[in-house]
Amino acid sequence: MLCVRIGPRKPPNRLSTFPRVDLLLRRFARACKEAIPRAALRLVRRLELGVVGRNLRDGIMVGVAAGLVGAALFAGFEYFQRLLLEELAGYVPLRADGETFAAGEGVHHFRPWLLLILPALGGLASGFISRLAPETRGGGGDAMIEAFHHHGGLIRRRVIWVKSLTSMFTLGTGGAGGREGPTMQIGGALGGLVGRWLRVSHRERRVLMVAGVAAGMSAVFRCPLGSALLAVEVLYKDGFESEALIPSVLASVVSYSVIISIFGESTLFARVPRFPFVPAHLPLFGLLALLIAAAAVLVLAFAPLSNDLKLAIGGSRWVRRPPRSQ
Image: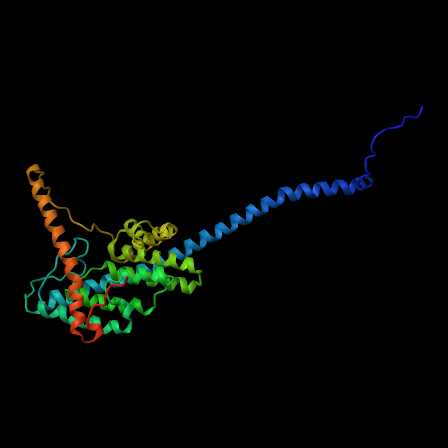
């Protein structure tokens, strides 16, 4: 008996005539479907490992460079101060207990009239040297922030030694200022120099600049974690540079390790006697805080007036302090 199928005829499958080819194509499609995502994931992991490896390498290099330069800068500060203030003028400034490696011994003949001359001479020497790199005039922190935001993290190489000399002459002769600003600018210049030497991208160079700032602060002030946090948040009024946090911590730790291997590890502050807590003294502390705040407001108010007065007097530009960059 003959049975006839009624309905639409199914189109013939051309591959069905070659079952081996059909099976091979199906296996190839299934293998591609599984292998391509795995290969892509493997490539991404390899790229991420490369970025992490570069950050580790660059952070270590910045930390070593900042540790060596920071050690030289710290020693220069101490020896300039010992030679000019202690040996020559007979004035012994207060030091932290862990920073007495360059302190002079014996009795010094105090010459108060030199304390009126030395800061002026140190300021003149600092201003004359700063003619080689005008961006070193001022504290240094503002110039570092401007280089980060407006110059792609680029600071000229000569800033490293010019800022070091001007800072030593200023602080070593008793001039007004601190080590924070010079250390920031010098450390930022070191980070940018390492970035240019490695030929990294624009974004990575800015990160290395921040890492250099952190490493320099860590070398001079012996505080790795605090230096890293300060470096990433001093750049903004509200916020911080999160991308540079890990390289900054790494560079700070390496820099700290370098400087303690040179000068040794010691307690920075000596133990002080215990002071009793007297609740009746709290109003006096509050009054002291108000007086200090009022004095700070007066200083900030008269600083622009003093700068305007120096500009009105005229003279060589390197004698005057430049106006603060906006």
